[in-house]
Amino acid sequence: MKNFFSALGIIFSLFLVMMAIGFFALVKGLDANTITDLSATKDNSVGIVDLKGEINNSYEFREKLDKFVQDKSIKAIVIAIDSPGGAVGASEEIYRYILEARSKKPVVCSLGNMAASGGLYSSLGCQKVITQAGTLTGSIGVIMMLPNVSSIMEKVGVQFHIIKTGQFKDTGTPFRDLTESDRNFLHSVASQAYEQFIDAVSTARNIPKEKVREFADGRIILGETSVKLGLADKIGTLKDAARESLSLVPGYDATKAVEPSLVFPTKKMKFAEFLENVNGEASVPFIPQKFQSMSIRYQLM
Image (cartoon, rainbow, N blue to C red; front, side, top):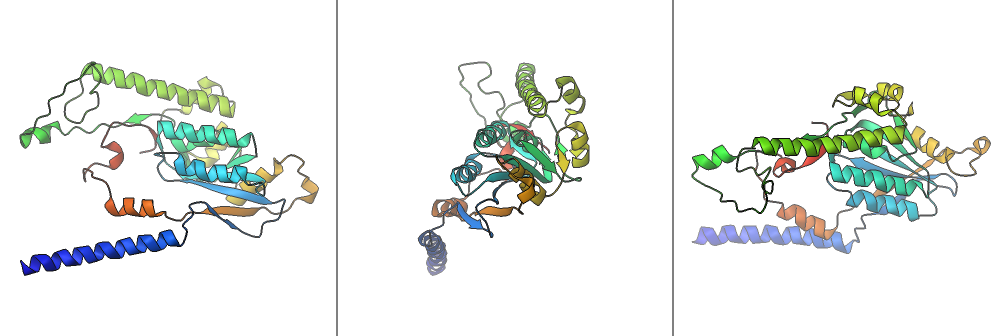
């Protein structure tokens, strides 16, 4: 019993330490959108908005983008993309947020190591796209991966009784095999999202749909090839993209051009996010989180 209370005391002490760290972070005023301004002048400030990692939502991206749109000292915006893509809905949202932003200020995309699938979709909102020669892009397509743990549940003697109000209400559940009708239905959903992707590429990049279909089979495309196909405009760096964005500012005078000053939003963790990270989420350890429920994705796997 004494050992039990000792262990309990240690756990409680660790919890208090974590709470203290979180409280200190909160007191220090962790603003998620504090801007670090690097030698900016009134004419050369370019806001840099990162789009990194898997795209599962658009909230943080929208907040950072909106802040730069509203900041009058920021003359143009560069979206720095390094992403394999992700959820269909979130990718489309980001694309539309960029379209909305560019109606107020010039927006140029800079593609880093990877801008594939949903990352590519997001870039379609930009006025210009600058890529590295070796950027992995393309991967135009849709993927759905559905776990099936029914055999495991059977072995451990657990059954799920499903009561539903429609034939496809439990389509994609991990607790039974897909029927032929399920497969046909999900394939039609994926095909519809695929057509939306092709339409967006064709419209944004002014490429005939028939031409888009020739390389829209899920293949990855190097940045150098993407320029030839019309998915990007030129080879260049983040700084080149910033220069390009300034050149799109109304009244820009090339004879008086100045080097762009890159302005980055500094991400600092909020107390609520700290607690969320401490608590974590329940998950099935051998299945990636994104595939523990049905998800339709524009993503390079």
